[in-house]
Amino acid sequence: LQSVEKSFGRHKAVNNVNLRICQGEFISLLGPSGCGKTTLLRLIGGFERPDSGHILLDQQRINDWVPQKIPVNTVFQNYALFPHLSVFENLAFGLKAEGVSRAELRRRVLTMLQTVQLENLSDRRPEELSGGQQQRVALARALVKQPKILLLDEPLNALDARLRQQMQRELKQLQRTTGITFIFVTHDQDEALSLSDRVVVMRAGELVQVGSPEEIYARPKNEFVAQFVGAINWIHAKPDVTGSIRVGAFVSKVQKSVTPNCEGKVRIGVRPEHLRINVSKSSEGIDARVLSQQYKGMFIEVLLELCSGDVVCVSRFNDSAGHSMAYSVGAEVKVHWAPGT
Ligand code: ATP
Image (tube, rainbow, N blue to C red):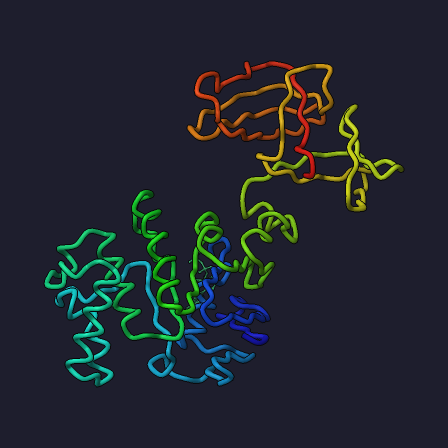
């Protein structure tokens, strides 16, 4: 995508987007509702035309191609299966339209049904299938045509949490075995991080950051990305001349130079899992008071008010079989960040 722009009336839905997607890549478009993810996907699929810029596929400019000519298939949120056709016929439909021979069609449909483990349900109609099975048919129908790119527009939204996790694993597996480029639209950050080779974070029609899941999470480019991808605490601190920052009586070295705001303060973003609580009053750390704690099974989340007035969340891995809820509400404790943070 080279300098791609698309407006609806006065509203710029996609603004100067430049992005190179590699063959065989699993890339996610992540961003809040209305940021232009679907529009970008529709531009790639040929369902919308860009106002300016170039969309190239294998060096060929496809801006003006009709969707049928572009070797790209789409899986939609609502599956859009043909209700009156069986599973087999749903898969066969597109191949028939392409004029694929009967024997070749049968071979390809049966192989694909095996890949998505639906070979025993090939005679059923969509209404006789569960949500997860319908989702698999939609994926298989798109993949059986062997597109160069599969566009997926929030395809797992209609599934409950457990099935969604299972389908995420299957989707990833399917992408590995087929080697087809997947462009996946989601507003679910966990999904984007766990599935993708690269994540594209979008905001108001623009690409804010493009990188591996780890880059996006561990080195967010700005406050928006830090906040949108994962939870983050903001702590107000004062920089001092020695290159340290100070929160109350707690002093810590910082690796980067910091520019204070007009009140002479800086804000530090720290992930909940990088904060530690120490109950010993003589230990190093920011003075804090426990506000509440929540049991989450694998994690304990503790909410604290720091002496700076900031309220922070500390998440602790629950690796003890017994005394997991260790802090009493109102307790005075110290908070510090993990070494290397
Ligand atoms: P969501 O996560 O809610 O699906 P999105 O990031 O996919 O959102 P888009 O559907 O791409 O966002 O929409 C981007 C912007 O363009 C929105 O403000 C939307 O209202 C607008 N828009 C999209 N399609 C049209 C259209 N056909 N006509 C007018 N405005 C449109």
